[in-house]
Length: 223
Image (cartoon, rainbow, N blue to C red; front, side):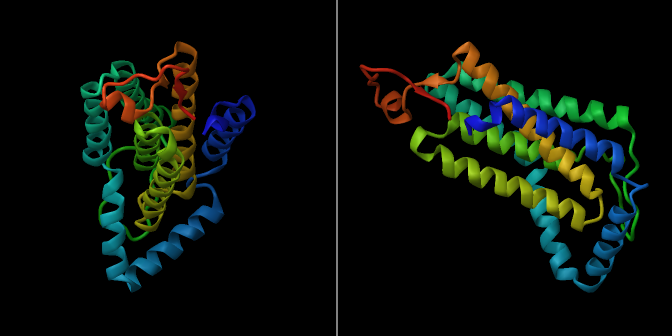
């Protein structure tokens, strides 16, 4: 996942976030049509809607903060305080940033056949941003080197599914969700860059730390 720290990738993510902010939302006819279609599908498929409600809960504060907290505690117990602190800070900072951006941008949520809408503003999607940040940062910072790729892939897939559930449930415009994903990726890429520069993401393989043996050679670096 070192590709996330490359300037062209960071620039592309930032550009995508800005585009979603500027051209998305209530004034976008394509997004309005998508939300009308979702409302029709929800009315015809109550079982699918119930399933989407369960999926969307994976992006809630209870789950995302719970995952990050448990991972940070595990790292502390296994003598990796720098990584534990970095994981906690990036997750908490991203959440504060999402809340601030919502209020500053002030985009209204879609209202197409939804019985209840959250009181917060729409852009960017908090569930999408928070799940991308918490799951991906946990995977990259916690996983041992040989498992980091699969864990990161699983984290991204899970965050994507959570975001899609927000569109299906009618509580976010598609651009809100894309904005959330990109913000989460930007948060993680910033953490990776900072961690590499500070040395916090250079560490010995987990099995050697747990076993109390340190390698004689170089250290492993988060990918």
